[in-house]
Every structure is written in structure tokens, then in C-alpha cells.
Amino acid sequence: MSFGILRAMQSGERDGAAVRIPPPLIYLGAVVAGVLLHGLLLPARLALPLGARVAVTAVSSLLGLFLIGGAIRLFTRTGQDPKPWEPTPEIVSTGVYRFTRNPMYVGMALLQIAIGVGLANAWILALVPLVLVLVYGTAIRHEEAYLERKFGEPYLAYKQRVRRWI
Image (cartoon, rainbow, N blue to C red; front, side, top):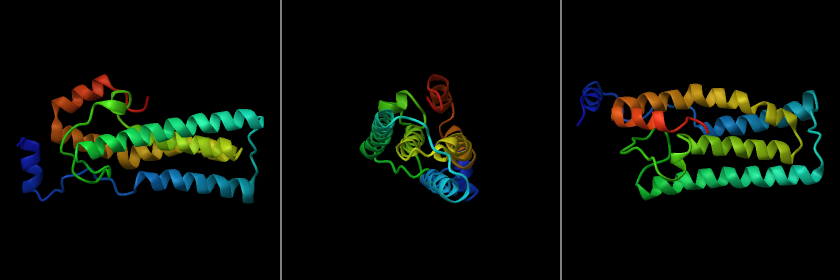
């Protein structure tokens, strides 16, 4: 047992990242906000031909689902819970985690892009960068701090090898 884990247990600190807002709700909130902004305030129609919209929507959706599904399969295979506030027994660094440290968040961003393009709603697309900043501030920075405390050098080495996003 590492000193950091022992110290956390003695202080009554819970084993898990201090994530208070489920990240999927942030992505969903941005889609809802984009729909409301478009419908009630200022329509911002995406000027793409239907064929291009269908292609971008399909590719973005498939990539997003691939990343999310791959991450969930790895979590299930290793007996972990994908909820970021639950304890992490080991660092997953295979499969989709070889390309991004946050495949579920990248996948959700790709799904948000697919929804925005599919609905021809530029607001939904414009909110993607804001969502990524919010997800970093409310989840990723807490997750990374937790994983650094819990796993130390192995996690730091993983961070050096694999990008946060893509």
C-alpha cells in the first residue's frame, strides 16, 4: 500500500476522484442549450449540404461510439466502474487508452459534434470547446490529481506517453 493511499485512508478521504458533476450531463446540457439558443434566441444554421451533413454525422457518431464502447469494454474487462468518482484499482492503458487518456470524453464530444451537424445547429458545435473546458475543470483535473496521488510514477509515465485528448 502506498503512503498516499494510507494517508488518504487515515484522513477519512474517499478513494475516488472528486468529480461532483457527471460529465455526460455537461455534454447533454450543451446540446439542450444549443437547441434552445437556436430555437428561441438566434438561429445559427450550419450551411452544409445534406450529403455532407449525413457523412460527417455518421463518421463522428461512429467514432464517438467506438471510443466510448471501447473504454467501457476495457473497464468491464478489468472490473472497474466507469464513474470517475468511484475507486480506480488499476491504470487502463491498452485499447483506446493507448491513443487518448479520456476516450469517453472525446467520444462524447464527437457525439455532440454529430448532433450539431445532424441538426445543422451551429450553436451545438460552438459549445464544444466550452464543454471541453468545463469537463476539464469539473472532472479531468480531479481525476488526474487522484490518479497521480494513487499511482504516482506509473501514471506520470502514462501521462507522458498518451495525450489528454487526441
